[in-house]
Every structure is written in structure tokens, then in C-alpha cells.
Image (cartoon, helix red, strand yellow):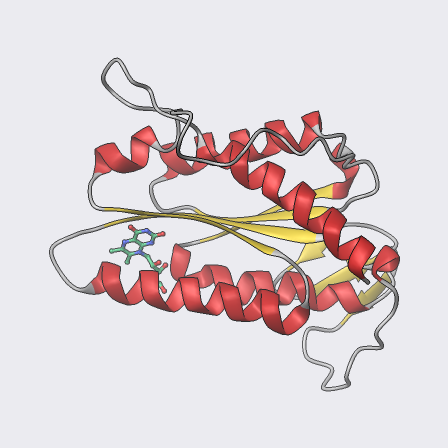
Length: 202
Ligand code: DLZ
């Protein structure tokens, strides 16, 4: 990576107390797999325990906002395990919280939240129609809204590439001499930093 662009050196934050979710799309899977691996690598290097990381997948990027929103929905309820079942609700130990109770969840301190941050990972590659523009716009705005509305950081791990090579390079899979930088690593670090900040700010 150049010295000019990209994030400044690692903030060296201890991720040991944090719980982090990764929600990824399955479109363009080779690139997705590399990005998820990059994010996981940095989470673990920062000290986030494997048992405190949940990885969930959805079909495409368009599904990311709903999945993130539902994963965060569990953040307002006491957590005893990190087992998440998006279709049937969220399981906390032996107690299953229904998906749509209609009852506002009790808010409890952030130390008890299900997730301190969620990383949304998708790879959108422009095609011949306007599809790309619509999904990029909807997903980016929705993910921002979710984090601002809930106060739980949602890391924007969605590549919006104009062609395959742009996406490959941003996952460290570039074809030429320059393999590129795996942006998943930056997203892992951003999740640790933001999760830690929000705990402090609460
Ligand atoms: C349909 C579609 C297309 C054409 N391209 C992509 C893409 O490049 N990246 C991605 O993550 N998803 C794509 N999808 C799938 C949509 O995100 C979504 O899953 C479907 O439209 C179903 O809602």
C-alpha cells in the first residue's frame, strides 16, 4: 500500500473484551473469502477471542443491511452465547428470543451487548445495467443509517468496483505484479477500534 493513501498505522487497541460479527455476501465468493480472511486475521491479532466472533452469510450485498440490523437487534438483550440464527431469531444460551416480538427490547449497558461492532462485507462489480448503482446506493445508505440509529458501529466492507481487477486488487488477489492490499484487514482493525471507542463513550 502507498504511504499516502489508506489508514494510518494500527491503533494497537486490545480487542480481548470485544464481540464482533462479520456478515458477508456470497456473490463473487473468491474475493469475499479473501476479505473475510483478512478481517478475521486482524481481529485475532488484536486479541478478539474466536468464541466472540460470529460469521454469518447472506446471498448478496443487497441483503447485508437487513442482516446487520437483525444481528444488532440482539445487542440490546443480555447475551449468554454468540449463536445467531437469522431466520428464527437469536439464541442466548437456552433462551430463544423470537424474531418479531413487537416488544421494545430493554436497553442494557454496552458491556452486555451481543456485538460491539458488525463488519458488513460484500463485493459489488459493475455490470451492463444500472443494477450496480442502485445496490451501491441503497446498501451504503442503509448501513450508515443502521450504525447511526443503533449506536453500534457497522464497518463498511463493501467493495464497489468498476471491474473484476479492481475488486481482486482490493482483496490482495491482484493478477499482475501488484497483488494489492487486502482491505478486509483494515475493516477488522476498524471494527476493533470503533467497538472499543463506543464502549468507552457509553
Ligand atoms: C443480482 C446481483 C448482481 C447482478 N450483482 C451482484 C454483485 O456484484 N454483488 C453482490 O453482492 N450481489 C449482486 N447481486 C445480488 C444482489 O445483491 C441480491 O442478492 C439479489 O438482488 C437478491 O435480492
